[in-house]
Length: 438
Image (cartoon, rainbow, N blue to C red; front, side, top):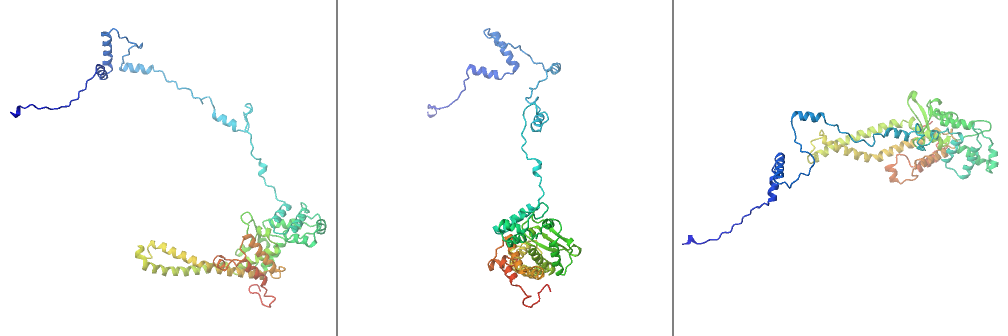
C-alpha cells in the first residue's frame, strides 16, 4: 500500500550549548549585591582553597535615618586646590608696569616713554617773512624775479621795515631797478615800500585779519560806489577759504543792513589788487544785475513747462501701455516711476539749455566787471585777461574746449573766449556808452 511507503524528511535545528563557565557568568550577572555576597561566602565555605584577598572589612550599608544623619554631621568639607593666581595681584602688576613711577624703582624695570612732548604740538605764530616766503612759493614767476623777491624778503626786519633801499638791493644783486620794482609790486601783495615806514607789515596784517583795511579797502569802496551801492569799509571782510579749498573769489552779498563784501584769502595770495578788483566787479555784476533772482525765475518757469509736458505725456503713455503695466491711472501710485522717468529725460535734455543760459549770465558779469573798473584800474583789459589766466590755472580749466564739450558741459564761457572778450571790449574808444555802468 502506498501510504505505508518509507519517506525521508530533512530538518535543520540550532541549539545553544553553554559551557559551565558561561553558565556561571550568566547566573552571577543575574544576582543582586546581597545575593552575590552570600554566594561568595558559600563558595568560600564549601571550598577551603579559596581565600579573600581584600583587606577591607565588609561594610554593610545602613540606610536608616540615624545613619544618614551621622554621616552628614561627620562629613569632612572638601578642600579646594589652591589657585596659582591667588597670591598674584594682577592690577598691582599692571599699575607698576604701565605707571610713570610709583613703586617701580626697587624692581629696576621701567617702560621707556617715547611719546613726543607737548611743546611739539604747539604752533608758533607766522611772521611776516614766513608768510611772504610761502606766498612767493605758490606764485608763478621766473627765476630772476624769484631771486629778487627773496632778497627783498631777506631785507625786511621784524617790524616790517626795509633795511635797504631798492637801489641797494638792485646794486648788490646786479639786478635792474625795473625788475626789482616788478618783483615788489606783482609778487609781494602789491607792497609798495618806502624806507622808514611800516607799510609792508600793515598790508599783510590787513589781508590776514577779519576785516579789509587800507589801500585795498579804499579801492573796493570806490568800485562799490560806482556800482551805486553803499557798503562801508566796516562791512568788508576776509574769509579764511584756504583752509578748505584753493579757488579764488571776491563778491558782494546780503540785503539791507546785511550787505557786505567778502574777499577770500586765496584771492589775496594769488592775485594782485587790480585783479581782485576785477573779480569783485564780476561777482558784483551778478549781484547788481539780479542774476540770482533771474536764475530762480528761469528755472521755475522751465520746471512748470516740464511738469505740463509730463502731465500730458504721462496720460498718453498710460492710455497706450497702462493695461500692460497694470497701472489703473495717474492716481495710481504705480505711475510714479513713469513720472520720474519723464522728469529724468527732461532734465537730461535741459542740460545744454541750462548751460547756455548760465554762460549768458556769466558773459554779462564779465562785461559788467570791465565796465565798473574802467578808469579805476590802469590797463583794465590786460588785468582782466591775467585774472582769467589765474582762474584757469587754479581751476585746471581747459583753455580751448571743443564746441560739443562747451555746448553740453560748460556753464561758463571757455577761457579763451573770456580772455579775448576782455582784451577787445572797448566801447569808450568807439564813442559808445557802456551797457550797464553809465
